Image (cartoon, rainbow, N blue to C red; front, side, top):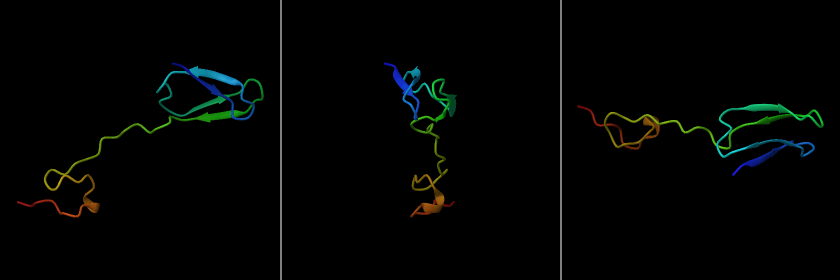
Length: 71
């Protein structure tokens, strides 16, 4: 299903896009009123968190309540 993307100033139809079609920031000028519309993805791309080699399985060492096992 396509979603209508409209101008923030005058609500003119700018384009139609499918879900997850916007992968990065888009700037588009409205042909009716001339407003520059800045669009970005609804959610940031998921980055894979780094893991400890050993330890409790926490993703962030500085916030880890249990230090990683040594030895």
